[in-house]
Image 1 (cartoon, rainbow over the protein chains, first blue to last red):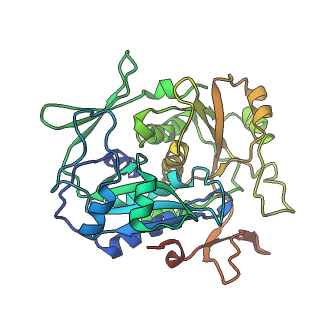
Image 2: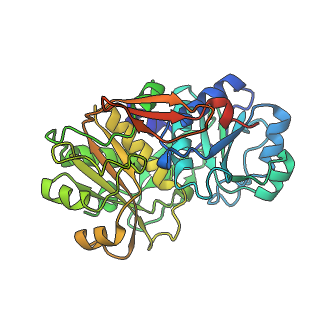
Image 3: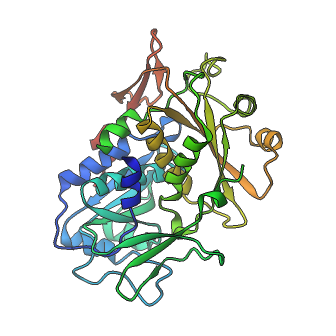
Length: 189
Length: 189
Protein backbone atom coordinates (compact mmCIF):
# COMPACT_ATOMS: atom_id res chain seq x y z
CA UNK A 1 0.00 0.00 0.00
CA UNK A 2 1.39 3.36 -1.06
CA UNK A 3 -0.06 4.99 2.05
CA UNK A 4 2.06 2.81 4.34
CA UNK A 5 5.14 3.69 2.33
CA UNK A 6 4.34 7.42 2.46
CA UNK A 7 3.81 7.25 6.22
CA UNK A 8 7.10 5.38 6.71
CA UNK A 9 8.89 7.88 4.46
CA UNK A 10 9.74 10.47 7.12
CA UNK A 11 12.62 12.94 7.01
CA UNK A 12 15.46 11.19 8.82
CA UNK A 13 18.63 12.96 9.88
CA UNK A 14 20.47 10.28 11.90
CA UNK A 15 21.62 7.04 10.36
CA UNK A 16 23.59 3.85 10.88
CA UNK A 17 26.48 5.29 8.94
CA UNK A 18 28.21 1.89 8.75
CA UNK A 19 25.42 0.51 6.53
CA UNK A 20 26.72 0.85 2.99
CA UNK A 21 24.63 2.00 0.06
CA UNK A 22 26.33 1.01 -3.16
CA UNK A 23 26.41 2.62 -6.58
CA UNK A 24 23.96 0.12 -8.06
CA UNK A 25 21.35 0.94 -5.40
CA UNK A 26 21.76 4.67 -6.06
CA UNK A 27 21.39 4.14 -9.79
CA UNK A 28 18.18 2.17 -9.24
CA UNK A 29 16.81 5.02 -7.12
CA UNK A 30 17.66 7.62 -9.77
CA UNK A 31 15.96 5.38 -12.32
CA UNK A 32 12.72 5.84 -10.36
CA UNK A 33 13.10 9.59 -10.83
CA UNK A 34 13.91 9.09 -14.50
CA UNK A 35 10.61 7.25 -15.00
CA UNK A 36 8.58 9.93 -13.23
CA UNK A 37 6.73 12.88 -14.70
CA UNK A 38 8.56 15.99 -15.90
CA UNK A 39 6.89 19.23 -17.00
CA UNK A 40 6.45 19.04 -20.78
CA UNK A 41 8.58 15.87 -20.53
CA UNK A 42 11.61 18.17 -20.87
CA UNK A 43 13.62 16.22 -18.23
CA UNK A 44 16.13 18.90 -17.23
CA UNK A 45 17.29 17.13 -14.03
CA UNK A 46 20.76 15.64 -13.67
CA UNK A 47 22.27 13.74 -10.76
CA UNK A 48 25.57 13.36 -8.94
CA UNK A 49 25.93 10.29 -6.70
CA UNK A 50 28.10 9.80 -3.66
CA UNK A 51 28.59 6.68 -1.57
CA UNK A 52 32.34 6.96 -0.88
CA UNK A 53 33.18 8.03 2.71
CA UNK A 54 35.58 10.81 1.71
CA UNK A 55 33.23 12.29 -0.84
CA UNK A 56 30.35 11.93 1.62
CA UNK A 57 32.17 13.96 4.24
CA UNK A 58 32.98 16.62 1.66
CA UNK A 59 29.28 16.94 0.82
CA UNK A 60 28.24 16.80 4.47
CA UNK A 61 30.32 19.89 5.28
CA UNK A 62 28.21 22.00 2.92
CA UNK A 63 24.77 21.12 4.31
CA UNK A 64 22.50 22.75 6.88
CA UNK A 65 20.48 20.48 9.15
CA UNK A 66 17.09 20.79 10.90
CA UNK A 67 16.42 24.50 11.17
CA UNK A 68 14.11 24.11 14.18
CA UNK A 69 16.54 22.07 16.30
CA UNK A 70 18.64 25.08 17.18
CA UNK A 71 20.83 23.24 19.69
CA UNK A 72 21.75 20.54 17.18
CA UNK A 73 24.19 21.22 14.38
CA UNK A 74 23.61 17.94 12.52
CA UNK A 75 24.41 14.25 12.88
CA UNK A 76 27.67 13.31 14.55
CA UNK A 77 30.30 11.14 12.88
CA UNK A 78 28.91 7.58 12.95
CA UNK A 79 25.32 8.76 12.44
CA UNK A 80 25.81 10.54 9.15
CA UNK A 81 24.25 9.60 5.79
CA UNK A 82 25.76 6.64 3.93
CA UNK A 83 25.10 8.23 0.56
CA UNK A 84 23.89 11.35 -1.21
CA UNK A 85 22.09 12.14 -4.43
CA UNK A 86 22.72 15.70 -5.58
CA UNK A 87 19.91 16.98 -7.81
CA UNK A 88 20.87 19.49 -10.47
CA UNK A 89 18.98 21.49 -13.06
CA UNK A 90 20.67 21.52 -16.45
CA UNK A 91 20.36 25.11 -17.66
CA UNK A 92 21.33 24.07 -21.18
CA UNK A 93 18.06 22.12 -21.29
CA UNK A 94 15.82 24.55 -19.42
CA UNK A 95 16.02 27.75 -17.40
CA UNK A 96 13.20 26.73 -15.08
CA UNK A 97 12.61 23.40 -13.42
CA UNK A 98 9.04 23.84 -12.18
CA UNK A 99 8.45 21.26 -9.48
CA UNK A 100 10.26 18.45 -11.31
CA UNK A 101 12.75 18.09 -8.45
CA UNK A 102 9.90 17.58 -5.99
CA UNK A 103 8.38 14.81 -8.10
CA UNK A 104 11.79 13.17 -8.53
CA UNK A 105 12.75 13.48 -4.86
CA UNK A 106 9.51 11.83 -3.78
CA UNK A 107 10.04 8.91 -6.17
CA UNK A 108 13.60 8.41 -4.93
CA UNK A 109 12.67 8.59 -1.25
CA UNK A 110 9.74 6.20 -1.61
CA UNK A 111 12.10 3.78 -3.33
CA UNK A 112 14.60 4.22 -0.51
CA UNK A 113 11.89 3.61 2.09
CA UNK A 114 10.87 0.39 0.38
CA UNK A 115 14.50 -0.80 0.73
CA UNK A 116 14.54 -0.08 4.45
CA UNK A 117 16.46 3.12 3.92
CA UNK A 118 15.37 6.66 4.59
CA UNK A 119 16.56 10.14 4.00
CA UNK A 120 16.05 13.82 4.02
CA UNK A 121 15.51 16.40 1.30
CA UNK A 122 18.01 19.14 2.04
CA UNK A 123 17.62 22.59 0.49
CA UNK A 124 19.87 24.37 2.99
CA UNK A 125 23.08 24.02 0.99
CA UNK A 126 26.24 26.09 0.76
CA UNK A 127 25.91 25.96 -3.01
CA UNK A 128 29.01 27.96 -3.80
CA UNK A 129 31.13 25.74 -1.57
CA UNK A 130 29.60 22.50 -2.84
CA UNK A 131 30.06 23.58 -6.44
CA UNK A 132 33.73 24.29 -5.81
CA UNK A 133 34.35 21.12 -3.78
CA UNK A 134 32.85 18.81 -6.42
CA UNK A 135 33.82 20.93 -9.42
CA UNK A 136 30.23 21.15 -10.63
CA UNK A 137 30.13 23.12 -13.89
CA UNK A 138 28.13 26.36 -13.91
CA UNK A 139 25.82 24.78 -16.47
CA UNK A 140 24.15 22.94 -13.59
CA UNK A 141 22.05 24.68 -10.98
CA UNK A 142 22.23 22.93 -7.60
CA UNK A 143 18.61 22.28 -6.58
CA UNK A 144 18.55 19.80 -3.71
CA UNK A 145 20.66 17.25 -1.89
CA UNK A 146 19.07 13.98 -0.81
CA UNK A 147 20.79 12.44 2.21
CA UNK A 148 20.30 8.68 2.44
CA UNK A 149 20.99 5.98 4.98
CA UNK A 150 19.44 3.43 7.31
CA UNK A 151 17.47 5.56 9.79
CA UNK A 152 18.63 5.56 13.41
CA UNK A 153 15.72 7.54 14.79
CA UNK A 154 11.98 7.28 15.21
CA UNK A 155 9.76 9.89 13.59
CA UNK A 156 6.13 10.35 14.62
CA UNK A 157 3.43 12.27 12.76
CA UNK A 158 1.17 14.37 14.96
CA UNK A 159 -1.60 16.87 14.32
CA UNK A 160 -0.95 20.59 14.43
CA UNK A 161 -2.60 21.98 17.56
CA UNK A 162 -4.67 25.14 18.05
CA UNK A 163 -1.49 27.26 18.23
CA UNK A 164 -0.81 26.39 14.59
CA UNK A 165 2.83 25.59 15.38
CA UNK A 166 4.31 23.42 12.62
CA UNK A 167 7.87 23.17 14.01
CA UNK A 168 9.12 19.64 14.44
CA UNK A 169 10.74 18.86 17.79
CA UNK A 170 12.74 16.16 19.49
CA UNK A 171 11.70 14.58 22.78
CA UNK A 172 14.03 13.66 25.63
CA UNK A 173 14.46 10.16 24.24
CA UNK A 174 15.45 11.46 20.81
CA UNK A 175 12.10 10.78 19.12
CA UNK A 176 11.34 13.21 16.31
CA UNK A 177 7.81 14.70 16.27
CA UNK A 178 6.33 16.19 13.10
CA UNK A 179 3.08 18.18 13.37
CA UNK A 180 0.97 17.99 10.20
CA UNK A 181 -2.01 20.23 9.48
CA UNK A 182 -5.34 18.36 9.69
CA UNK A 183 -7.02 17.38 6.42
CA UNK A 184 -9.96 19.71 6.94
CA UNK A 185 -7.58 22.67 7.22
CA UNK A 186 -5.92 22.03 3.88
CA UNK A 187 -9.01 21.19 1.80
CA UNK A 188 -10.67 24.56 1.32
CA UNK A 189 -13.33 23.77 -1.25
CA UNK B 1 6.86 -2.63 -5.65
CA UNK B 2 7.13 1.12 -5.93
CA UNK B 3 8.88 0.80 -9.27
CA UNK B 4 5.87 -0.92 -10.84
CA UNK B 5 3.62 1.83 -9.50
CA UNK B 6 5.91 4.55 -10.85
CA UNK B 7 6.01 2.89 -14.27
CA UNK B 8 2.21 2.55 -14.34
CA UNK B 9 1.83 6.18 -13.25
CA UNK B 10 1.94 7.78 -16.70
CA UNK B 11 0.39 11.10 -17.68
CA UNK B 12 -3.04 10.21 -19.00
CA UNK B 13 -5.25 12.66 -20.86
CA UNK B 14 -8.21 10.50 -21.97
CA UNK B 15 -10.49 8.79 -19.49
CA UNK B 16 -13.65 6.77 -19.02
CA UNK B 17 -15.51 9.87 -17.94
CA UNK B 18 -18.50 7.81 -16.72
CA UNK B 19 -16.39 6.24 -13.94
CA UNK B 20 -17.12 8.31 -10.86
CA UNK B 21 -14.51 9.40 -8.34
CA UNK B 22 -16.21 10.42 -5.14
CA UNK B 23 -15.34 12.98 -2.50
CA UNK B 24 -14.06 10.37 -0.06
CA UNK B 25 -11.56 9.02 -2.61
CA UNK B 26 -10.30 12.54 -3.34
CA UNK B 27 -9.91 13.24 0.37
CA UNK B 28 -7.88 10.05 0.80
CA UNK B 29 -5.61 11.12 -2.06
CA UNK B 30 -5.06 14.57 -0.55
CA UNK B 31 -4.28 12.86 2.74
CA UNK B 32 -1.31 11.20 1.01
CA UNK B 33 -0.04 14.67 0.13
CA UNK B 34 -0.68 15.86 3.67
CA UNK B 35 1.55 13.09 5.03
CA UNK B 36 4.38 13.88 2.60
CA UNK B 37 7.41 16.07 3.10
CA UNK B 38 7.17 19.86 3.00
CA UNK B 39 10.12 22.27 3.05
CA UNK B 40 10.75 23.22 6.68
CA UNK B 41 7.46 21.38 7.37
CA UNK B 42 5.72 24.69 6.65
CA UNK B 43 2.87 23.01 4.70
CA UNK B 44 1.66 25.95 2.65
CA UNK B 45 -0.39 23.87 0.18
CA UNK B 46 -4.18 23.96 0.07
CA UNK B 47 -6.58 21.99 -2.13
CA UNK B 48 -9.87 22.43 -3.95
CA UNK B 49 -11.65 19.24 -5.00
CA UNK B 50 -14.07 18.69 -7.84
CA UNK B 51 -16.00 15.56 -8.75
CA UNK B 52 -19.33 17.15 -9.79
CA UNK B 53 -19.91 17.14 -13.58
CA UNK B 54 -20.82 20.82 -13.82
CA UNK B 55 -17.87 21.96 -11.76
CA UNK B 56 -15.61 19.59 -13.70
CA UNK B 57 -16.62 21.15 -17.00
CA UNK B 58 -16.04 24.63 -15.58
CA UNK B 59 -12.49 23.63 -14.60
CA UNK B 60 -11.88 21.81 -17.89
CA UNK B 61 -12.55 24.99 -19.87
CA UNK B 62 -9.55 26.69 -18.22
CA UNK B 63 -6.93 24.01 -18.96
CA UNK B 64 -4.39 23.55 -21.73
CA UNK B 65 -3.71 20.00 -22.93
CA UNK B 66 -0.67 18.22 -24.39
CA UNK B 67 1.48 20.95 -25.88
CA UNK B 68 3.20 18.61 -28.37
CA UNK B 69 -0.04 17.19 -29.84
CA UNK B 70 -0.74 20.30 -31.89
CA UNK B 71 -3.70 18.80 -33.75
CA UNK B 72 -5.46 17.80 -30.55
CA UNK B 73 -7.17 20.37 -28.35
CA UNK B 74 -7.86 18.02 -25.45
CA UNK B 75 -10.17 15.14 -24.57
CA UNK B 76 -13.66 15.16 -26.06
CA UNK B 77 -16.81 15.02 -23.96
CA UNK B 78 -17.07 11.43 -22.69
CA UNK B 79 -13.28 11.08 -22.33
CA UNK B 80 -12.69 13.92 -19.90
CA UNK B 81 -11.43 13.63 -16.32
CA UNK B 82 -13.88 12.43 -13.67
CA UNK B 83 -12.35 14.65 -11.01
CA UNK B 84 -9.80 17.37 -10.34
CA UNK B 85 -7.60 18.38 -7.47
CA UNK B 86 -6.56 22.02 -7.67
CA UNK B 87 -3.32 22.69 -5.80
CA UNK B 88 -2.91 26.13 -4.27
CA UNK B 89 -0.16 27.89 -2.37
CA UNK B 90 -1.41 29.79 0.65
CA UNK B 91 0.48 33.10 0.56
CA UNK B 92 -0.56 33.85 4.14
CA UNK B 93 1.59 30.88 5.18
CA UNK B 94 4.49 31.31 2.77
CA UNK B 95 5.48 33.39 -0.25
CA UNK B 96 7.43 30.56 -1.86
CA UNK B 97 6.44 26.94 -2.21
CA UNK B 98 9.74 25.37 -3.22
CA UNK B 99 8.96 22.03 -4.81
CA UNK B 100 6.30 21.06 -2.27
CA UNK B 101 3.67 20.81 -5.02
CA UNK B 102 5.84 18.33 -6.92
CA UNK B 103 6.21 16.10 -3.87
CA UNK B 104 2.48 16.32 -3.16
CA UNK B 105 1.45 15.71 -6.78
CA UNK B 106 3.59 12.58 -6.96
CA UNK B 107 2.07 11.19 -3.75
CA UNK B 108 -1.45 11.85 -5.03
CA UNK B 109 -0.83 10.33 -8.45
CA UNK B 110 0.85 7.22 -7.06
CA UNK B 111 -2.18 6.78 -4.80
CA UNK B 112 -4.47 7.23 -7.78
CA UNK B 113 -2.48 4.67 -9.79
CA UNK B 114 -2.79 2.14 -7.00
CA UNK B 115 -6.59 2.54 -7.20
CA UNK B 116 -6.63 1.88 -10.93
CA UNK B 117 -6.98 5.55 -11.70
CA UNK B 118 -4.55 7.83 -13.46
CA UNK B 119 -4.10 11.45 -14.21
CA UNK B 120 -2.10 14.32 -15.46
CA UNK B 121 -0.30 17.20 -13.78
CA UNK B 122 -1.48 20.30 -15.62
CA UNK B 123 0.45 23.56 -15.32
CA UNK B 124 -1.03 25.13 -18.45
CA UNK B 125 -3.92 26.88 -16.71
CA UNK B 126 -5.88 30.02 -17.47
CA UNK B 127 -5.34 31.07 -13.87
CA UNK B 128 -7.24 34.35 -14.06
CA UNK B 129 -10.25 32.59 -15.56
CA UNK B 130 -10.15 29.68 -13.14
CA UNK B 131 -9.82 32.03 -10.16
CA UNK B 132 -12.89 33.95 -11.29
CA UNK B 133 -14.94 30.85 -12.15
CA UNK B 134 -14.36 29.20 -8.76
CA UNK B 135 -14.10 32.43 -6.77
CA UNK B 136 -10.67 31.50 -5.43
CA UNK B 137 -9.48 34.24 -3.05
CA UNK B 138 -6.31 36.14 -3.99
CA UNK B 139 -4.69 34.70 -0.86
CA UNK B 140 -4.18 31.47 -2.80
CA UNK B 141 -1.75 31.13 -5.67
CA UNK B 142 -2.92 28.59 -8.24
CA UNK B 143 -0.01 26.16 -8.69
CA UNK B 144 -1.22 23.06 -10.52
CA UNK B 145 -4.35 21.18 -11.49
CA UNK B 146 -4.38 17.39 -11.24
CA UNK B 147 -6.82 15.79 -13.67
CA UNK B 148 -7.99 12.35 -12.55
CA UNK B 149 -9.95 9.48 -14.05
CA UNK B 150 -9.80 5.91 -15.21
CA UNK B 151 -7.33 5.99 -18.11
CA UNK B 152 -8.66 5.25 -21.58
CA UNK B 153 -5.30 5.20 -23.34
CA UNK B 154 -2.07 3.25 -23.33
CA UNK B 155 1.17 5.07 -22.55
CA UNK B 156 4.56 3.57 -23.39
CA UNK B 157 7.95 4.67 -22.11
CA UNK B 158 10.70 4.73 -24.72
CA UNK B 159 14.30 5.87 -24.75
CA UNK B 160 15.29 9.23 -26.20
CA UNK B 161 17.11 8.62 -29.48
CA UNK B 162 20.27 10.22 -30.86
CA UNK B 163 18.28 13.27 -32.02
CA UNK B 164 17.58 14.10 -28.37
CA UNK B 165 13.90 14.69 -29.11
CA UNK B 166 11.86 14.45 -25.90
CA UNK B 167 8.44 15.25 -27.38
CA UNK B 168 5.79 12.67 -26.64
CA UNK B 169 3.72 11.54 -29.63
CA UNK B 170 0.64 9.53 -30.47
CA UNK B 171 0.66 6.63 -32.92
CA UNK B 172 -2.05 5.87 -35.46
CA UNK B 173 -3.83 3.60 -32.97
CA UNK B 174 -3.90 6.29 -30.30
CA UNK B 175 -1.03 4.88 -28.23
CA UNK B 176 0.91 7.57 -26.36
CA UNK B 177 4.73 7.34 -26.57
CA UNK B 178 6.96 9.06 -24.02
CA UNK B 179 10.72 9.27 -24.69
CA UNK B 180 12.79 9.32 -21.49
CA UNK B 181 16.49 10.18 -21.35
CA UNK B 182 18.69 7.14 -20.63
CA UNK B 183 20.06 6.73 -17.11
CA UNK B 184 23.65 7.28 -18.16
CA UNK B 185 22.72 10.67 -19.63
CA UNK B 186 21.22 11.99 -16.42
CA UNK B 187 23.82 10.70 -13.94
CA UNK B 188 26.78 12.99 -14.52
CA UNK B 189 29.05 12.08 -11.64
